[in-house]
Length: 290
Ligand SMILES: [Fe+2]
Image (cartoon, rainbow, N blue to C red):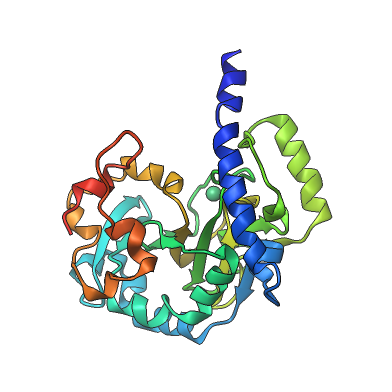
């Protein structure tokens, strides 16, 4: 009974989220070659992507030095026995504005959302290592509302490397309940779906950029060897930012350290906007003074 309540209590919220989505997607249905909307996944070669690899070379080779680097503002968030796992990047770092917040990425997101969208959290550099043991993840959805991931390969990634898989077109469905990724029935159903559609991978060359909707489409991480990538998340509502309640770096200045002109842009509104403390507001939004 409790379980049933847990499942149905979100249906009215999803009804609202889906209605908003339906209205905004009406505007973009006729955009031509809108692969991100049609498939939920798009991958392309990028000169900017290659430049990022060159620019961040020092940090990629020796991530322990990141916090002393003047290439941008970085904070090491976690390590394991193999080395640094995640480095957060302050969004006012200039190289992001030069190579990442640029039209080849933003235009695709614009055509995907059909409305305003925002950077959800700090961009990160993620490291996986040869010999590292990872649990292979189950195919899953993040929240069932639009949330796009941008992954930029900073090393050559083949099918033996750690990478993401995405079942194309699964983003098209409107859902009212988040499927339990570990439930046998769900696993069997996704297995069937994965045979029907193309399973795209984020494998490729240095600089290749994959964008996919992790909110509405089934995806999983495939465990493997070395991978370095730049990762960004974009969203269009506050519901996606709940995880930030747990994000508590000691030096909160690293969230957005500069009240820079550069962040006076719609893209950053979800982060620079000051919300009143309330039950629904992630603490990170009212803790930080900008
Ligand atoms: Fe996910």
